[in-house]
Image (cartoon, rainbow, N blue to C red):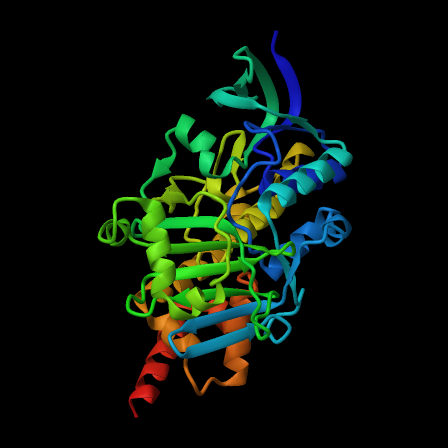
Amino acid sequence: MIENKHVIIIGAGPAGSIAAALLQNKGHQVTLIERDVFPRFSIGESLLPQCMEFIEQAGMLDAVKAAGFQLKSGAAFIHNDQQSEFCFSDKFSTGFNSTFQVQREQFDLLLANEAQRMGAEIRWEQEVIAADFSSNKPLLTIKKGNGDSYQVKAHFVLDASGFGRVLPRLLQLEKPSDFPCRQSLFTHIEDRIDCASYDRNRIRIIVHPLHRDVWYWLIPFSNGRCSLGVVAKPQFFNSIADDESDVFHQLIQQEPSLAQLLKNAQYDTPVNSIKGYSADVTSLYGNGYALLGNAGEFLDPVFSSGVTIAMKSASLAVDVLDKQLQQQAVDWQKDFVEPLQIGVETFRTFVTAWYEGGLQDVVFYRQQQHNIKQMICSILAGYVWDVNNPYVKNSSLRLKTLVELCRDNDKQ
């Protein structure tokens, strides 16, 4: 017997839970299909202030604020003796001036619980193994944790499966990303940082002393632990050692400020790795479905864009889907894809410039103009859909010009 549901969402991570809450609040019944059991580990722990707007839209802001997560008020960039800080309260765009650094197992569970509180149904330990969108109602085949399977029809399916990329795999929508293949090595540690000048309210992004396309993240949590990672091309890691744990620890020691800061740290969690994470698809929507967040496209972890893009895609998709379910005419390309791509392309411009070195020249430029720094700060805060910001509206041309100016002035 085939079940009938209103809206199916694949994945109960941030995009899925935000979309579920927004739909429930608009009067649509939602069922989420989640492969795992929460809490479960995930990276993407440093939120951006823009995220807070989507959390507020979903009616979850009070719960997130009350959870005791580490406040995040800005970012500190470090390269050898250079340090540049960006404070989110001093940005070009209006909006939230702070956000949180979160252990995702707790954060994702909180959002899922909030979606359930609003009436969404979550089916844990179940996996979509087949999908048929050839008729007027999508048909999904779902496998339970015990191995049994069943089928469900729905009016619409949102894929928020993240790196699982369920519908892109099942519908052959995947295409190669134009980003170079990179790899992240990361872990959680008890940091035991006793430096009086260390600000736990800011993420640290640290450039390797010798290799500018290699960088570290240090994300403090409110419980004395932190997320620590390093990003490079796989061949760079392979040139150091065969064992990923050995590579990781050697690289931490190669960065003097990081090694000093973490001199008393307890490395009590295995080193994890993710490689070739940049992804793209041929289309973000089709007959009866749309792709949210990482299920559609993922760029790079350097500016913590993943969760922000995921939540924005959920917000946009829900607005379009709500109209469609009310039998109104909609244009998914115009009202979902094109608005979403404004921010994605802005992030893409900045990520590309980071690895090419140009954005680093801007970030560490010693004669920064205050108004321009505010505009750059807005990008770092996730306000990449604010087209009043020149570095959003004409991101590629503006940033290229700024890089050239900074480099020319440094030569004088």
